[in-house]
Length: 596
Image (cartoon, rainbow, N blue to C red; front, side):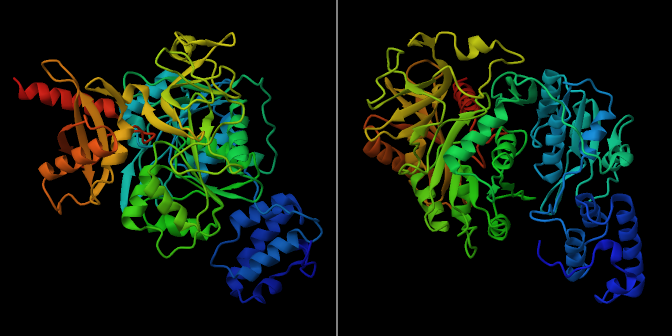
């Protein structure tokens, strides 16, 4: 290792510290702390540097002293001295809760360094993570705690969103959660009063102060042992409780390596949450491939996140289309250097060609890898690839280890080299995919009634896909988002793609087919979110005409928009999927009410 001119830490004196310009009184206190740590862990161990970096160093101390400590500790270490070590206490402390191995422990927190460490510690210690989005109301939290039979929950007192403090612990309490371990927001010192039996984060870690420095030995389990319980969107009824096993992390890592080229030395950022599958996916796809995770504390919609991408030198940036839509509308990345990005990943909803052409231009036209899968898949079944030409808003290949089949009107797969559109079915053997559900019959949900191909029943997923003449795939939404307009089946997304670009003041749209109260063909209703609803350049009647002109010219001359409903925002699940069923129900009720 370089910099052998630094003294070993057992040779550093108070005078050496003062010589760096540190005041005498502060130098004395620093020297005492360093001497104590060296006495506990030795002068040249990774543990010594770990505790010096945590308990002694801070940005206000001259950086030259940081160098004295780092290079002095690792003077004779050799190559690759660790600059950061995981604290084995978040795993040891879990043992003190007295829970049986395999017990479920929930996490309801923003995705930051604390929640990621807690997630990994729960798995390391042989327990099962229950993923809960930090946006959920108490009733949704309660549903997931009950379905998973969680024995404890990690949460936070507040969530900071700009100048606002959004209560989180109080929602967990209102959900009648089991024992909660409560972490203070970085802007607070846990001033709230806890329920009897709940534990503050500092008190939780204090339970294992004597274990500091000891390596926690991971609990060995069979490959099919549960490690995480996640939930489907739950737009109707209870969400499906989907367990991930010890195999699922390798599915996530394989997808990241094969399709996004995530590798050692990369920096991966993807605004997400541990309550959505992309949160755990990000942990495994990054860390198992030797990459770092860039975690942003705050909303990803503004210029603050754009600066973070620049400063963190992100190499793979994951997005969802609605975030890109907002970035484009606000020009959020303007003035920031995104040249370190090698590729983008996109998931969650259908993307727009123009918006993604704009996105590519922010990073010198680096490729966008479309990535579509599901919680029960543990990753994706269809994606892009850096080994193939990439078309905008399109997928180029089945994911490694997965086969795709588009079902024709007769319910059976069309030939793999023939263009067509229909419900997508998956080959039944998918590396890392689910084999059970906690609150539903897995076979009935995914296999019952599906066609047989080569002696094997195909797996249902529920998405409608189109295979083009050039071999690309386009997503057309969920099969249950398909409407029948005058006897012609069409997906909501096909209509929305056209309506979204009719007027520059449109932020997004949602198309739904509403059955008339008196029966008859479905009526096409478009919900519209405007960028600036106070400055509409024309009335809704003119917009209705524009919608119809565009749809009839670009999609089908028989299509006709019945009405437009302006909304401040579209209803979405915690995973950002538009809940068109909710809109359909609301518009149907409104239509019936108007006839009473």
